[in-house]
Length: 377
Image (cartoon, rainbow, N blue to C red):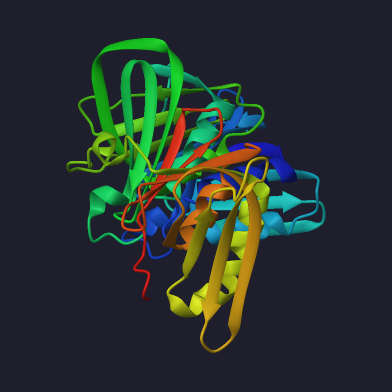
């Protein structure tokens, strides 16, 4: 193998695939990145056997070939090279790659490419969705997936295809997020599968402005889903198990509905969080309807610390229904508000013992549910 690439392109490609490299790989080759020539391009691949990432970068290929090199060594070296052409030459007899860039000359020892696991690659796909839409759908669901694997299925995001609607849902037992979008394809029979949230987060991270569309190859005989972008493929194993019936969790009625400016509510929650940290992030929302005709309703967000003090933020709001006092994990509220780009947000509740429902005003394609915390904490 003998190829030439630009330093910035190589550095970006290595950064893209490196997220699939395990810190403590079970096999030495899994700590490496596969480099292979392919159609006048350089292919870079990494895998942890649960997720694989492959990206292609433009290259001048003088001689075909393939090798795997230690991910950290290679990335650290390339990131510290000058921004010019990098020449890579493989000595197949010693499995060593010579890396030349300007006045720098390095040699990196690798492992035979034949030992690298087979990595799935995409094609046209079964579902095509605008990259911008998929990126937003991922951002608005992965945050609510469980971080601990006490119930492994909850560490994933459920994807459902039914008719011409794609639904993504996540839940960790304390909160839920559901986002829908229309797609061009129509599924006469519903298709459901659960993708690890970590894998989906990588898809969202990698989708760029260049990716007008992302095609998704659905699981078939192997339990693998594949996301194909303009220059990058991500393949992920699926999670096994029964995902909760999210439709049954979403309340259908409310006694109080409150409309607030998203940015004002987010700022008030961030201030309350500073003091709520000492009480397991429990903060109170006090919603009061207007005192009289023509007056606004009010929402108070209160964070308290017995040792450090307290904070109370007051927001004008449009309130329908009854006054309520309800306590939430304030971080969960912040997580939802951080992924909403809408000017105003709707908060609905059936009382302090019931979950709170958060939606963007005027849209029905996103909803988040947060379970309340005990008022006496």
